[in-house]
Image (cartoon, rainbow, N blue to C red):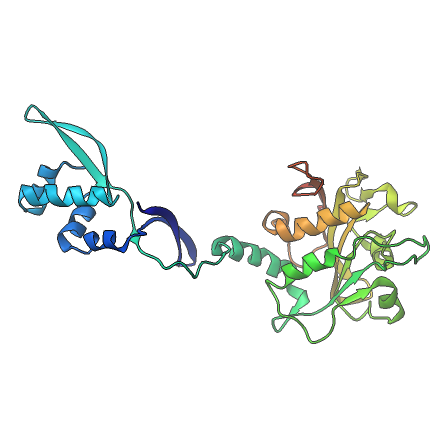
Length: 322
């Protein structure tokens, strides 16, 4: 018997899905290759009919109509959908079982991302990372906290590897630049590259000294007295202190107004993970409110929806409104 699948194609920039019935036995497809059988299938795609009615519509012998109806039913191209009372008797109604039919080889399948979703995600991401892409390539540095004890708190970063997930996302909207783009926070400060580049700083100010350096400029910032006590929204004075809450913020580089800074940080490492996942996996929803050339910030919160110990969903908790 045939197998029902979904045919995906792109038309006018939209991704269209259509049911297609695939024949595993090529002999079944020979039935459809008969011009009369194909005309009958097209007729019965719009509305169900009984064989005598089909014969009248196509102006063919009733015996031919019954013959091809039986053949098409046998291969699964027609299906019985009801009955109709005709001249004191009961006639069976038939209709096409699928809007498309085909055969396929047993190779060539690959996973696809629906283009309308991808295009929508890229639209928001391209706008948000506009200053970070030059001639199609990423232009900037990703700063992560050093894994060794460092900074005034002698703390060790546990969220530097989140840059890998972010890099995969950036790869969908930009090409790889010739220079290595990831630096440890201590190296970035020592090499004095902070003033010269667009920066994406990953990790809270307690473990990333570059985030700490820019914290006071953020519209939603970490508590200056104790970075681990939470975030404070300067426009509303609301505070956010849960471990799974994270910040996504974008501001001008205070040392170079031609450069931008993006901060992805949490009160704890799980909060940083929530921020990274929000920006990458949920960019369409997260970046809807972003407007070019404005200070912008969101507090997000990650959730473990399937109780496997991992964050798999992110919601917006608060949005900075200048």
